[in-house]
Length: 414
Ligand code: SF4
Image (cartoon, rainbow, N blue to C red; front, side, top):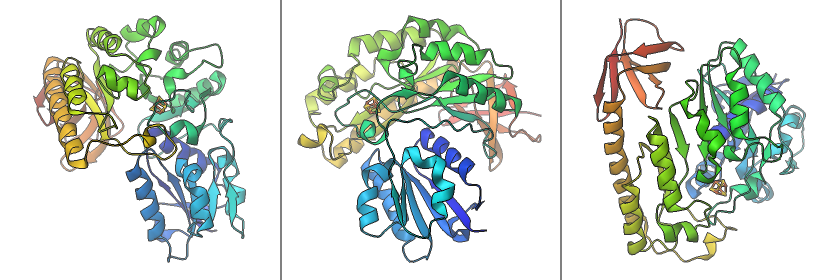
């Protein structure tokens, strides 16, 4: 039996997509490293230049290994044709072709199957054996048109998974012992728009499933948070942390980026959610074309007013084919790095104050052992390091005596 290694780059959606690919590989054995494999399937990401170059250098490193390399994921759509023509890869597997992987892997001749960007995969993933939490992909694609973003062109427009399939999948995983569910997708807040439903309606139904203890959400857009969603914030099964993508906090910059959110609405939204005891995360892009010193100053002054405790900030990365790619860049890499550091310092302070305020009872799902600690995430999506003689992996623990330090939360359990 030939051996296949599945290499995953990128986001939670890609982790999930790799699981789908693995479910469909029937006549090959899956191995844990490329050294042991005859075939390597690279599930790639293309969201930034560095994501592209990571996948490209990985593919280059396999060139003289005698292994067949198959390119899947977003990079298969953006770079697949070029790499295929250059003979760097044996095959191209588009998003909609995952279900055919088993047959394609048997091919003796090279194949180019980019598929389409309108279908949605209906595979039910029943087990995530190496993980403590289960990822559920509830939708695919995005209808927004942010000026810098390549995602809609490599994942297509927003389309929702069938509600019935999602609920069946969660029921099966809950019966397999999973208690925590992470809902993922390209733009999950758009769930249901094509099905006369909404993410709030879906969440309510998920909460009724026996065994569902905690639901985490991927990234939401501010404009998608409506009254129906706000009503869920008091539910104890919803993680007390939301990730709401702002991307910037300058009025002018949001216009340049063609974002749908507006600064003052965002501020009101964050304040009202924070008042309910939520930790809040966001995405932020620094160094986008047009981010002059004046715009940056405005952005950072506004940013300080937001109760943000978790940050995913990155430097602008030019993506060919996007509107922003036609604009000239004014911010060099060194300045962008300094700007990232300023944002991170603000959020580190916010996080420290938040954790000191909300440490009286932390409910942690322990995920792994790291040196002398067993580590997991609490209900606010903060990492907690636990010292204990007990074997806690995959256990839920409730901690009342937590030492909060700037670098993290620590506890002892005997
Ligand atoms: S919301 Fe904007 S940034 Fe997010 S995937 Fe859609 S187009 Fe890209």
